[in-house]
Structure formats: structure tokens, C-alpha cells
Length: 271
Image 1: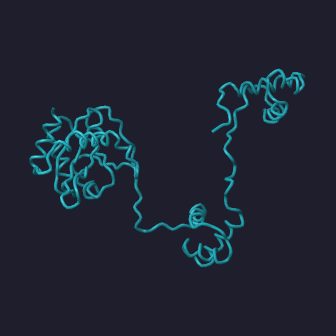
Image 2: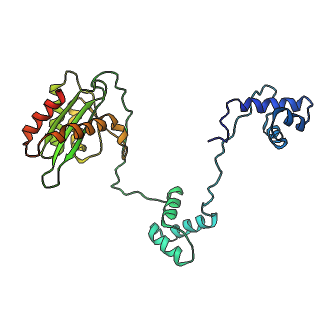
Image 3: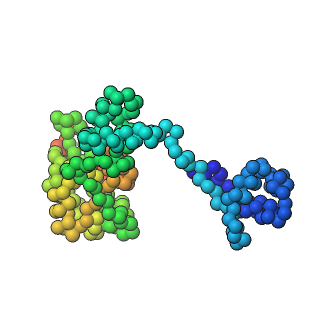
């Protein structure tokens, strides 16, 4: 962030420079503009030689270096230790601590990553996020998620679906969550909806994994995931889930069966 947010300051700087170029002294300009003499001198050094210039832009106040950054000697030592035996960051940290260096493990890992010396796992999954469609009409963007209700021994799962444009919602209770149950839930919601689903958006849960994506594509729909650890991407559905938990689930007796819970949820949503 810049050290000043005054939108007129770039023009004021150039006006001060023009006054100096018109044979005013820097001290006279400083008194006239209400700034220090040193500020006027610095503006003169930053001003361009062209006569057409009208402003002197405000420079960023971001520091060039972090006050606690590692010295060049430490960085070179980390790289040398790595290239000597091609060892991992933990072993490098142990060897450097033994040799008298005072460095944290995270600093070594950060330096190795910055220098391009980190090897990623061959099994690492690289997430791709296509452009989020704009929900101009119903069905363009439909968000789906699951709610876990109850203790682990008697846990039930509530599938929720919400169309971002029309706010049309659909809820079903299930005893298990799998990719097959997820697909059946989306198909059931599609049969009850008066519009066609185009894009299904979910989180990275196991119930929305690769098999679910393949089956969704086979049904002429696209499947996109929200960003990792970013629940705001499904913000509409997250608020709806909170409403379901506070106003619907709390009113349904725990002894109800799955079919009875589905009937109760449907009646509560329609009321």
C-alpha cells in the first residue's frame, strides 16, 4: 500500500516541480506548497525531463526486503547442503543445526521451494478450477453439499442442493454417503426441478470424487469443485445448510426413520 492515499498528490508534486523550473527556489516552493524542502528536492529528482508530464506517481511503500530475511550466506549454505547429497529438508536442518547454523525447518523448506529444489510427490493431485459460470438463469450453477448429523454410531447424512439463481432447494436424508448416493441424489433433484442442470459445484469430499464426475458428465452436466479450504465458494449453500440445521433438523425427533425425516424436511421447506 502507498504511504499516501491522496488522489491529488501526484498532480501537486508536478506543480511544485514546474514552479522550481520557472526559476522559483526550492525553499520558496516548499513554503508556498506547505511541504518540506527535502520533499521538493526528492520530487525534482523523480520528475521526468519531458514537458508533457502532468503527474509524479505515488510510489509504493512496500519494503524491498523483509527485516528478518535470511542472509545470502545462509541461503547459499542451504543450497550447497541440498546439492551435496540431495537430502530432504529435515536432514538438512539437522546437519546445519549440528554445524552451528540457527535456522528453522520452515525457513529451509521455504528456501528450497523458492529456489526450485523441491520435488513434489508423483501422487500429488493438482486441482484445476475452471471459470465459475455466472448464474444468469436457473440451472447454470447448482451447488451441492452434505451435512453430517448425529454421533458416529448413529450418524445420518443430509444431502442439500441449491440453485444459485432461483434459490430452488432440494434436501434428502441418507444413511450413507458415497459417489453412487450422490449421483442418485442429483438425478432425483433433476427430475423434480423445472429447469435443466448445467453445472454442479461441490467441495472435494469423497462422495464427489472422480466416479461422480464421470457419471455427471455422461448426463450432459459439468462438475466443478470449489477451491480447497475455501467454503465461501459455496457460500449460498453454506448459509442454507445453517438454516437447515437450526430450523429444520432441530425440530425433527431423533427416533424418526430416514423416510419420516425426508417427509418432515419436505414439509418444513414448503412451509
